Amino acid sequence: MKAAPAPLLLGLGAVLFLGCSANPTVRRADPPLVESASPSASASVAPGPQLEAPTRPRRFDVTIARHAVQHLAGEIGPRHATSPAFMEATEWVAARFEQAGLRVRLQRVETPGGVSWGVPVEAGASLNVIAATPDYVPDEPHLVVGAHLDTVPQAPGAEDNASGVGVLLGVAQAIQDRETRLPVVLVAFGAEEPRGEGDANHHYGSRAYVESLTPGEREAVRGMISLDRVGVGSVVPVGSADEGRDRPADAVARAAKQAGVPVVRELNRSSDHWSFARAGLPGVRLGSTPYAGYHSAGDVPEVVDDRQLRCVGRIVLAWLSN
Image (tube, rainbow, N blue to C red; front, side, top):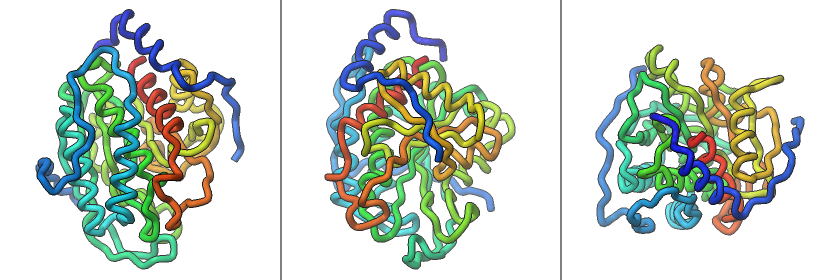
């Protein structure tokens, strides 16, 4: 898609700089897939905020993200990747994507049993919920933004990772009827959480997504952001998959600077961006600030800070726009 005209970018910049103070960036060490039609919204699906007529430019609406955190963690609760609760969550997220005018499909992810953070979990099918803007063509240049929808079995998963899914849904609303520099694919990944030790027992949904891409479709991915634990802290971690210079992470850091959001740079391979990066695709993580409720029953909606959700949403919108 063509770049947005200059008046739009000026208006977007004015919106993005509200509410987040600009500080210098610092560095911290640290078998075939089966797809089906998307589910439709029904009376059993908890309603989200009503979508109003789009205006240009749109700002990131944090109430959408907060509603997602409350619904996923406060009402559905723990939702490991092959559980009935996870399937309920996928139906709800798919309906929200459809409400935002995106083309939605589901991708089946075969997931083994194992032990997830000390709790046995059964094998079965998980799902990726994939939503694309109407101008998306698989083998033409596009951008990907993802967030994993599953949790470990004992956690309601407000910060990990209803926060990321909430920002994803807020972005879906914000880009409705607004030009982005390229078409956009938004993915709520299944089966990100570990089911054993080591990288081979982690990130099943994003690995399945990448493995399903043809060579032409892989070449068309011009950037990927994983939103994973983005609801706490006073700065936003930008996680690079590569040591040394990382141009994809540099681009996200520049977007954060434009948005007026302070970030910290770090090496991080513990999210779905790693499935892209290790396949040679440009992947970056946003999020990972430590918090007391990590992978526990204490990961409840009250943990999540709306100010941090808003700042992360502004970074993503700046990255999509420029």
